[in-house]
Image 1 (cartoon, rainbow over the protein chains, first blue to last red):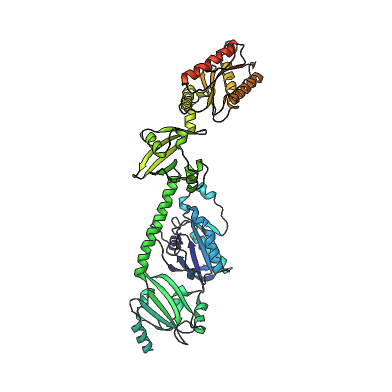
Image 2: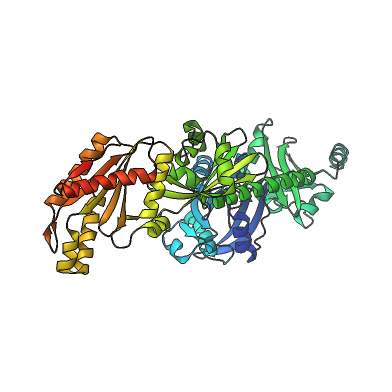
Length: 158
Length: 387
């Protein structure tokens, strides 16, 4: 069985833990409880008849005064870069998360999540530019969460 | 092996540290009794280390390198496992084994987490408040020392600055727009605190209000009401201002001892238009006349309908020479214009300069007399009357 380590990276309070919880446990709680350090969850999935164990690293969010420990980046095959679509600063911050991640893991893959899309109107959603690696997600209403993780796994196995 | 276990147990507190000894293929050789609390089961000798600590997946190569270089070590900090926070460190033990130490840091990490939670919530709350403040009317906070301490996005947008530091550097004195006799935000506050005032900046009108924020700051709120004010204060037929609005500005100009020139103007023989073509055509002529004037005056000039076919024009912050040139050009414009229904018409202007001794009545009276003189002396002309 193939084992892959992936990271969820992004600013604090963008919903990384909620995405993992939705994907792994199928649950959601909108109470904000900040993550400190890292918590690893496992998920078994089959992609193109290949059984895989996904080790999902829910990494603490970076804050204005605290950057993420580079130790967490070691050996990752992929990353989900998460932002809160209602907070522009977190969307702007994605570029830095991508740069640091790829500098530590140059051959790795990533996808992007514009999370908390349930807070947007339908018109606002239509105005957001997306591509095959960028998803409007909502852990609250389970929108595109599965597609996000599967897309990253597909890219890592390609 | 029992010796090793004995020694390790002796040097490590069981409550804080647990250990795993692994061989070169990273399989368990020995293990302390408390490791199970982190992984919810009892691990076995011979088991793969990565099955116990999947956190190490991806780092196998780096870990095995420790065998060849005993000064190396591997550290992974603050890992949340089964309701505990632990640090995982791996170091050389002997030629055949590595020592994996699991350090329970739950107490200190939970304290740190409380602080982080508080800090993050504060930042989120601050961001939310900032968004609310920016969505409001233009806001200006001033200290008791008359220093600007904060302005919101709306205020900065209106005054064309990007940062609060720019507002401070420019030393914006909004009280100058209300009354040139005001010298500080304290004086402005005294004036506005009791009753709101209208403040005109360029072509925009604001309602200015003030209130205390604690005892250290004053908050000035500027609510833009330009559109509403214009609708209320405009003559619906001609689009010129109403006389009441004109009077307010004229009074302010006189009170503030500002320079200005007043013209009273009307269309010559307009009564004949109404009598010959009817009032509908008369209204159209007034609309065209008004449109011509409005399209050829400056932004801060004020054009108003006095009544009937008589209009008022206040040219602010200009001297008599320039004003006369402008008024003469307006007269020529009308003279050369072809009105839609009736063709050619002319206009007359009576002009007076605001002098120090003038009040609103004396100034209006002098300009009105000048208009009569223009009419009596043949119409289609501009007459200036000195005091």
